[in-house]
Amino acid sequence: MAKFHINKHGVPAPCKAKPGNCPLGGDETHFNSLEEAQVAADKMNEEKHGIIPGMREETIAYMNRKENMILDGLSSNEETTIILALEKELKKFKGLLKQDDDWFWKEKVNTIYRIFEKMGYDKEFVDKHILSEE
Ligand SMILES: [Zn+2]
Image 1 (spheres, rainbow, N blue to C red):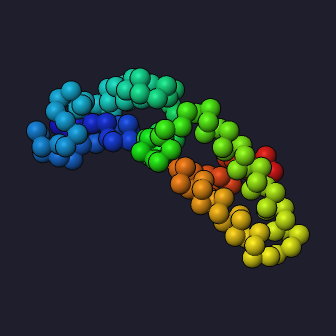
Image 2 (spheres, rainbow, N blue to C red; image 1 turned 90 degrees about the vertical axis):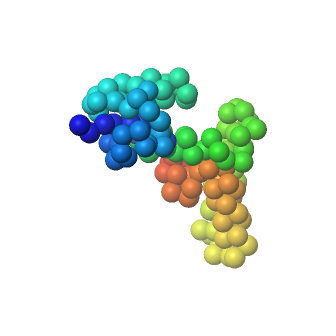
Image 3 (spheres, protein in one colour; image 1 turned 135 degrees about the horizontal axis):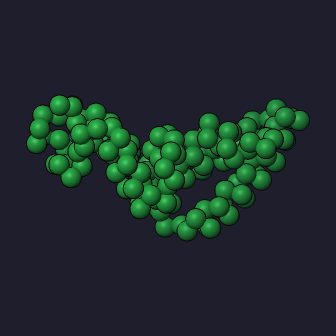
């Protein structure tokens, strides 16, 4: 019978390994049904991140990925402060770039996107979730 485990993103998935051969662990991380695995995954994610059950897979994967980024030393309050400052700068330079298509403004905009990327937020995420009220 197919087993389900919780993958490294905290998401239930069918286990394709031979019994006893799964790198994700033994019986304690394997379940007979997707429902059982989902219940365990929700509990695990909630304990680890305060994630609410039903949160989207991409969001959980994203949060897990961010855990390993270079800014681990910052508190969320500090990170939020940096994001707000960068957001303001990015809007300013995007506005200037719109008025005047100059390489200097373009470089400023690209630099800010690169900083966001180093913080674990890719361009798509920044455009969609950080600059969204534009
Ligand atoms: Zn497995």
